[in-house]
Image (tube, rainbow over the protein chains, first blue to last red):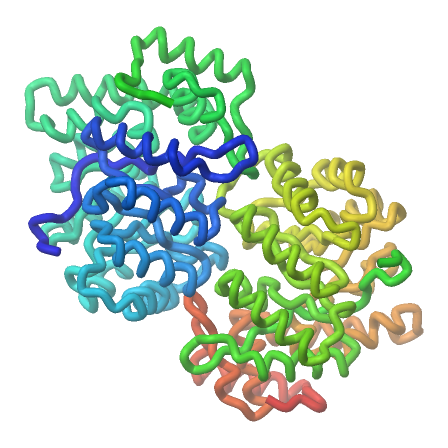
Length: 307
Length: 307
């Protein structure tokens, strides 16, 4: 892969559709991914918002193969491949590279807490070495509120030095702009692509050398977020950002993943889309009513969506 | 399984031996399990201290099959089978039941934080229903410092009501005696077996209706801990407890898992035992020296251990 072809822009941690029996629905998944691509949004499948950690490696491999065999372009994909178990991370990462995915978004092993940077360095190194593919592009996934295991500046520095090119960037879902900015300032000029973990920091990110964003609400509001990425130097950029924030805040009043699925179920006309796997719980009927009323009041739409 | 045959006593979350290439060493694992049984300690294989979350489901199934085919009695086993992904938990739990394991120790799905008791109830229920085996005995695993997702009194109450007999007990690794006591007071008389997560609370637990303990240091100090379980009503019980605490505190001065493995490596004369999987890191040479000097000073031994 040529570095000129690096994946950038707005990516969605694609929510995973389940059937009533809680098994993934591959056909619906393909349709959703194709709709997101039609909105100019890339596919960070198997992210936190995808309930990826509620899926087995086999389930993820089956879904990834279905996407590619259905004609979804792997150059627009950055699947999440980081697991607690080294062998799981290696297996899914190798598979993603084999299928031609642009990159992989890698959680640190997140069960053991308080682990050292040395331990995390070894964890990521082992995956890179065992996969052993020059095409591999790793995006480190910093999401301390959930994983509880952070990606530090010092860790990135060591990994970048040892695996330049392979360590391609990060997603920062810490929600702290000063942290995102510290990574941008330190490494963006070395070709380390920093994606804020929400469109909240899309404009600030682009003004500071960011690569786009990977955001939950890119599942439901993809077109407008992608438009800001394309036109961030336009006169109305701040107004666009304010409008994006307004929609995001509406979703953020509810548990995010069930709220995203409730919106897709409603605007796509397919109630089954609301299904989540335990330990998550779908919104109550009252919550759904509140969310949709709020979104309608804000003239929110999901153009072209078919459940 | 007859309730009279419920697994009780002292169990070890057996540390998992790795070869230099970080693959599990099944022969060494069998030897370690047989040694623990010889010390009257049961086998909570695939616990936190087993680095179980650094192993894939396939690796765990292979190890479990090796144990049973090597003549290790599954009635003395309580493997950890809880994963983030529902399908992983179902698969390993079903396999453990099929092999005849006395019970399974089940972590809640631990990636998503701040999940509701309703979500956890559904998560455990789905596993029980899908495994669908009357022989299944589930021990809920409360370890908030690591999993960050707690098992509450209310959750246990709902599960016990729906699945009496199947929900057989818990391990409480919260390190807070008042929490352990609350579970003992509420449910021990209903046949819900509470295992404190360290021998620190073994004597207090037994005096309040506890079922034994499942403890990291049962890997290295099994005989004396098992002896206190057998003789907790003897005159020297408090003195025994004090001696156990002294040994535990020596290990607890270091990162626990690498320290346990360092001790086994030293007293068993097999340096490879010290190997851990990332994100863990083995003790430094200086730490090993300090640990062994401290243990020797306390006349600590591991009788009969062969690496």
